[in-house]
Image (cartoon, rainbow, N blue to C red; front, side, top):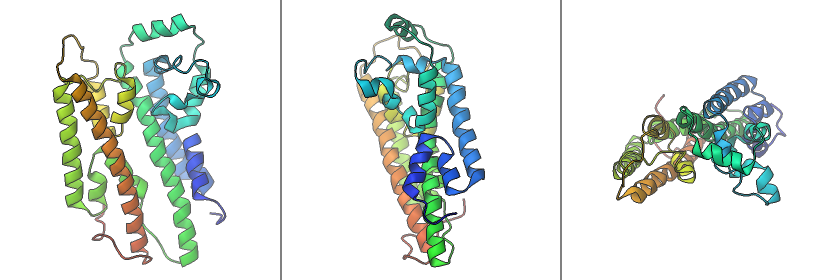
Length: 283
């Protein structure tokens, strides 16, 4: 790959369109995989939600020139900005009354649909980081004449799907277990206090964006528990919603830590720095 290409440009291109960062980095195979994975997730979700994803915020920033026309307020879809922008442009034209009607009329498959479009944003952000790592690693290997094995984005993906698994993959089993148990305990407590109804994107749109930081638990809870009706008073509903959001945001912090740890392990494997932990166990 050309040595003058910049990792941060690969990151930005990857956020703009799935696989574009990998294409810039010169890895066509990963580019196709990234494009297929994110696009399939996003388009399938869009079909199942029937454009209802745009009903929640389409009038929220009416009158503000930038926010009205750029879907940066669609979270976490904005992590897959290019495809979200395209869907935003192609959405059926509707009046204010039409948007209100979309809000009032649920779609039978909206929970899984809205979950998939949202998770596609997180997934694309992780894959964009992988494209940046490919260029950074390639430059190091050219300069140092040695290999720097490691896939930080894969460990991030593991941690996103199963909290704590990324740390385990990078050799920190005790830390991984503590992180996983803590986040999952918060998640279960949040579900318990909310009577298992707080992971519901159509009802709790902005809170859900934070909850989706824990990808695996969010996917299961949104799909299985999201459709449960809120047909009675729940005394500790606010506490449940908050705990789920905290769990998701804590997992985002965990992803950052895992990525940094994986980079250090890769550099240590190449002899550039001292190993911060025991050698990473094969996945």
